[in-house]
Image 1: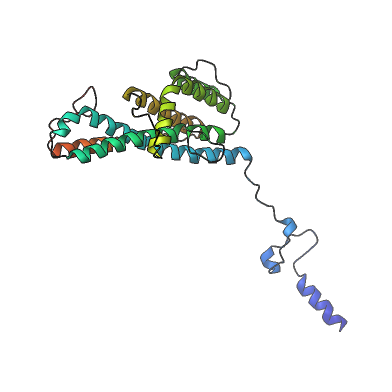
Image 2 (image 1 turned 60 degrees about the vertical axis):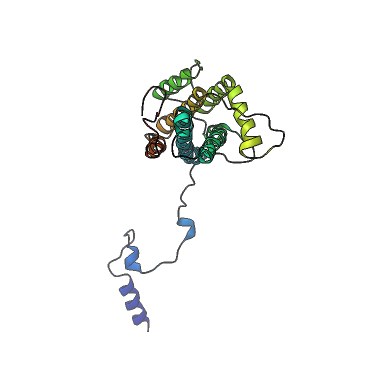
Length: 262
């Protein structure tokens, strides 16, 4: 009996010696030792904030692209209004287009520039608040300074979030009259039907272009300098397509912009 047990032990330990590593496959399945399993570390808050800002900035691009289309349609209607009235387009449809263009401009500009303490907005203030504390490198400082000087901020950048917040606040202060009028139009006419609404006109086309330029430049700066992703270009297919549509309905040499025929 003793001899049999000894032989079995010898068979189990054949080819082994102290200090020799035995592969798990040679030993067969082993029970999982949970203490020995290293858990994958959670991403630090800076990485999570960066991913959040990246997603918001991508959503901002969609808003800015739609704003571009609304500005183009609003301008084209204004430039060609006399010819449109003499075309095959009905007055009712033309009135609908003008009203839709007005309301869309107010709504989308508010979406882009609005801040909120209750909702996670994909607006410029929402993106700024979602950025982690980021001390800028030399290349980033040059890019941030170029953007800011374009809109009136001539201070030197050091940290991304605080610098963008200051630049945004300065820009909104300069254009507060236009932004306030758009918000009032949105609140009383575009999104609601206020019986006491007195505002009927919107800011000039030049103001729309400035607001668009700031939003688009902000998107490109965050995309290129913080997210390290080449910014996407914004096509103007809606405006060009509208030109082809109205020309097919009798408008001759329809104007696309103030300084060009098409």
